[in-house]
Image 1 (cartoon, one colour):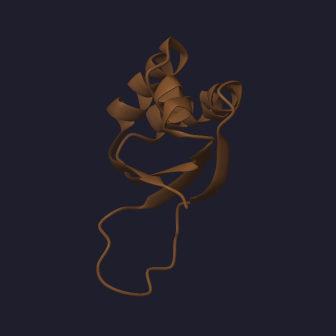
Image 2 (tube, rainbow, N blue to C red):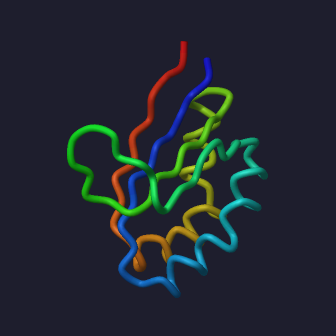
Length: 95
């Protein structure tokens, strides 16, 4: 079953975050993940939103997401994301 990961991100160190972003797609695609959306100026149509960027990804299943998220390759680049931003990440199962 398709698994979706949604990240809401506030960037406070652009250089560190950009270092992460420059390596992100290579690691994502190595684990068969797909980037569905990435927007630093999403249109908030209802409620309040305290972040700057949204990222939506898909994986064939939860095991594929976990393999990517816990991989040595992702953990290495994630150091720059963690240092350069604050994020909330949620995972949801598709239908």
